[in-house]
Amino acid sequence: MEYRLGEIEMKFADLIWEHEPLSSGELAGLSKEALNWKKSTTYTVLRRICDRGLFRNENGVVTSCVTKKEFLSKQSEQFVDNTFGGSLPGFLAAFTSGRKLSDKDVEELRRIIEENGRK
Image 1 (cartoon, rainbow, N blue to C red):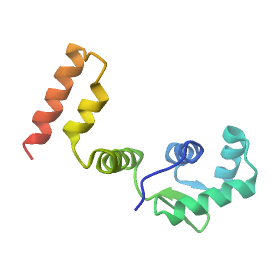
Image 2 (cartoon, rainbow, N blue to C red):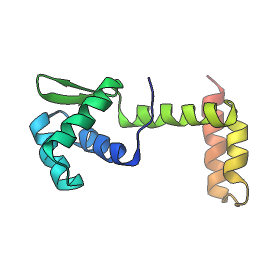
Image 3 (spheres, helix red, strand yellow):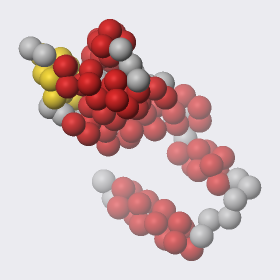
Image 4 (cartoon, rainbow, N blue to C red):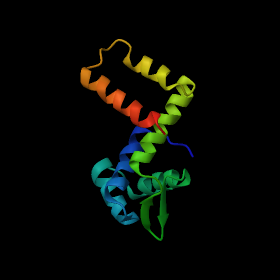
């Protein structure tokens, strides 16, 4: 499954995650209000992201197949894999170059490493 959405698709996905389950008609109304979309645009984008396996539209009820947290986690993993050959240390080195980490940041990173290193 591809865990990538464009900026506008992400705003649309956020509408679904925030309001699910919801009818496709309700989603069209929210999309008109939040994104200034026509109903046809809503249904086109909905079909596209459903085809990717992120959401489903069954009997006019739209729900997610993955949570937003799961989506963001997988998206981050794909980014590290594609950009840094899967090297988390390589990603962290690039991310932190040119900036000083606060003591709080360092402590939080240590906590995360300790919690996840024991699996």
